[in-house]
Length: 253
Ligand code: ATP
Image (tube, rainbow, N blue to C red; front, side):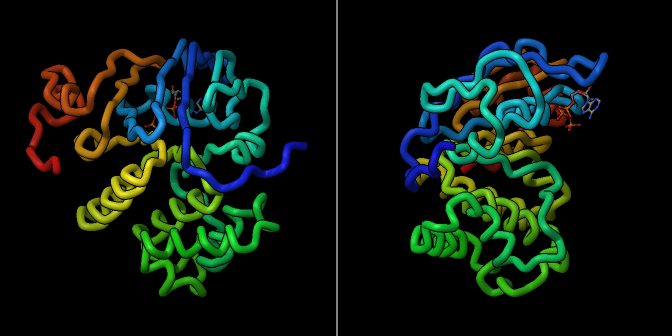
């Protein structure tokens, strides 16, 4: 078994080619392809059922798929999920999937489970998480399920960061959150991106996703139908009509 790698946020380039996956008769992915350059923040938007969650799960190895997934040029097809985490990718899953009866601190430590012998590295990463989400430091002894929805989402992202990823993938991190919390989480996402972390963000809130991303992909029926810079897609009349309520309210910054 490969040993956990040393912490590094350098790299994080993802190349996905021709992914195909199905649930029985339902074809979830049909030739999906995308790229994330090192340090890039890339969004995936699209309607319900387009295959966005399936794509992230296939990249993580949670959903069996054919095609190619390369992380920093290394082919991951056939590599089990836990080894993909060791190699530098992490998924913050839809609906958070926290360990509800455990404390904030224990949830974070479980994110670093494969690095538990690193000691100082894990402690430094917990400081890194607390620096980005100070409320988690305050509530570190609190039971996870008693946190607010926004705090739970912060914990889910924090747990993902505890695996010291080069590529952080997030599935609908803004779902159901109040505007103020959405803003807070997007600020952290932006800050992580500014530090060089590669980020792939699936989001129903297309407006928020396009406001924060460098580039974006639009998925429909299991494949990518449109891609480009986030600002170009935000200005595209088809994208505006389908995903931005017909117009884009200006709040980029
Ligand atoms: P949403 O935004 O609603 O989560 P999505 O873009 O993430 O949608 P997926 O959840 O990946 O899309 O679903 C892609 C297709 O696969 C849809 O047709 C969906 O109904 C189907 N699907 C997803 N999960 C399953 C499952 N466990 N069993 C059967 N079909 C599924």
